[in-house]
Image (cartoon, rainbow, N blue to C red; front, side):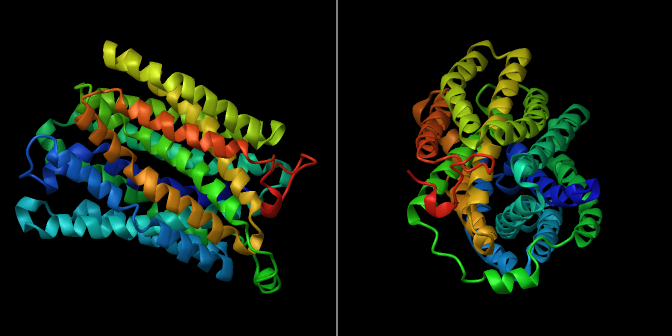
Amino acid sequence: MRLRQIVAVGAGNAVEFYDFLTFSFFAVQIGHCFFPASSGSGGLLKSLAVFGVGFVTRPLGGFLLGLYADRRGRKPAMILSFMMIGVALLGIALTPSYGRIGIAAPILLVLFRLVQGFALGGELAAATAFLVEAAPAHRRGLYVSLQYMTQDMAVLAAGIVGFALSLLLTPDQLDEWGWRAAFLIGTVVIPLGLALRRSLPETYESAERRTDAGGHAPVPARFILTALLMMMATSTYIFGIDYLATYVQDSLHMSPGAAFGATVMIGLCAVIADPISGMLSDRFGRKPVMLSAALAILLLVGPLYLAMIHLRSLPVVLAGSAVLAVLQGLFTPPALTAITESFPKSRRSGGVGTVYALSTAIFGGSAQFVSKGLVDVTGSELAPAWYITSIVAIGALAMLTLRESAPRRPERANASELLT
């Protein structure tokens, strides 16, 4: 792939995750804007619930847009999903506050979040299938890691924007219009991204689609379950770590600047770790890399949260964020690569989209709401760490049941042979 083609695939993923993550990072301010009558932490919980609503339509988007990509090609599906996310992004930024239009404000917010979720469910399905098919067999891990790399570049960009706004604006200005400015910044690349995507080649041509359709045995149900558990773990970890921006403000009672500084650190370190993880999985296999990262997560997440809770200093929060981000970068790309390359080409986009979207909708979308709720119910600021590690432990057990899927290995297998 040429650089402009990589940018074309990554632009959609980056913009869509910038959109989703900006909502997460500004959850406190959005709660003030759309739920001003809520007292205490009620406004934040409602805001996080609306964030989770965006994941409800992900499975539908993953299935329908994935099916569309398998029948019409990867390129049309990627263009359609990108157009939809542009509409949702602009809509959220321009929706008036509750004080101006009353109950219509949160209703419109929910509708735009549903459009976002639908588009993002289909985006990852088509784009990941495109990357696997465009990559040389011995570089699939690296190519698929670009999916997570662009996501983490979005985290970095959202963190920089949020950090800058938190320094330049007062809390009242952030509540009134600062969070809207962050969303509008994301719309700048929509026209460029559409133009770049229109120039992409098609990796699944019409002749292939005609000959491949229906030509494969059913994908084993056990493999689908294993893939769901793996994606459950990676989604919970990703969105649980992204909750740090809110956690630092709400639970640790530190400044918005500290929260967005942690976000910048997460984005920066994960952007570096993602391609390294992809290259390691191409060299040593998917399974050793993702299982090593899972073990490190189980050992380190609890102590890192304890350090942030007890010391509550910016250097400790930044250091903890850096380690958590590196572990994320090592954990997630090999899992997605192993699942994607195991599906037959004629069902790859729909299969990956459905598995990823279901697990993300149930566990990724609820991770922030559950984390906040657990803190409130238990009174323990350590609750998010225990939640993350318990889900990752389940995902690691699922990973243990897989044989190596990297093409360089003699025991490489398709989906029907992956389970021991």
